Length: 369
Image (cartoon, rainbow, N blue to C red):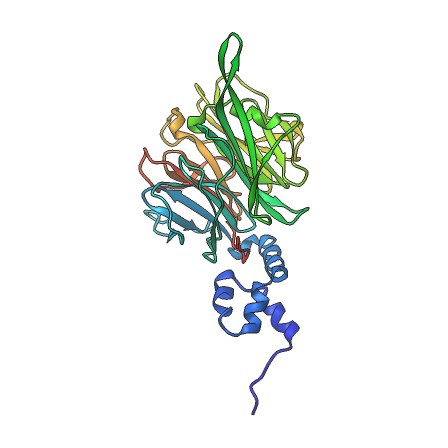
């Protein structure tokens, strides 16, 4: 009696609704399944389904610390007494010693950079696929700003690197040193870097910031976003142009801002001195419209700390009845708040002096190779 079989279209439909871990295993079943699961069309369809269904636990948070390496967290699950619900991940490629900082995440891919270097990696933590990027073509500099995202117009993943360096010019009256910036863009489709000349120079305003606590980049709506002194700078990857968004009304006493995405909207964490609730969460309800900023809540400060080392960075919004969200405190502490800014749980993931990063991503079969 012949073994039962399903029509090809039925099999395809079943496979595209399976989790990534299962698909990785099922690639070994037969050559036809491997070919299907590895195809760009299947990967795109599977990702779109996963992205639109966050309740299916496909949304994860990736944490990076120098001492503990990478940890994977299900945002909807409790942290555990000592963070024991987190899964440790090994990085698949050999590299120099140092902390791999998180640059950004998009469509299941995470961009990493070696701290203090310009060694970039693209990694899919769900499948283990990884790629080291070619060396960047910008001049040596002592300050860098990074960003990563997806250009849907050209179906291309791009890394943006802005470097700040000292340029020396010789004049008849002597030598003059001044600060210049260079912008380089990496295209995964071309597998190469190029120097980008921006006519309006908006992106160069990024260097008006305290770099000891620069909050990094956020990708949303096809653009990479950075927060500068009193503005948000958005670099659109499709047309490679920059624009500025206002931050919420500036108040005396604010000293830090952290940019992120909560519930599909840009959000800001404001930190200020001399306030019973020194941290505030603001959400831009209508993208790009300054008047749509809305204060969601003031955040309870667990130990009344006002130091910049205690600053919060947005991590991810959880799917729950009380609109819970997770913030990563710069000293290495994860804190889950409810929608009223009250602490639900917290856990330390590294020591106070250590740098740590975190980002949300959606599990996918997208490969950097």
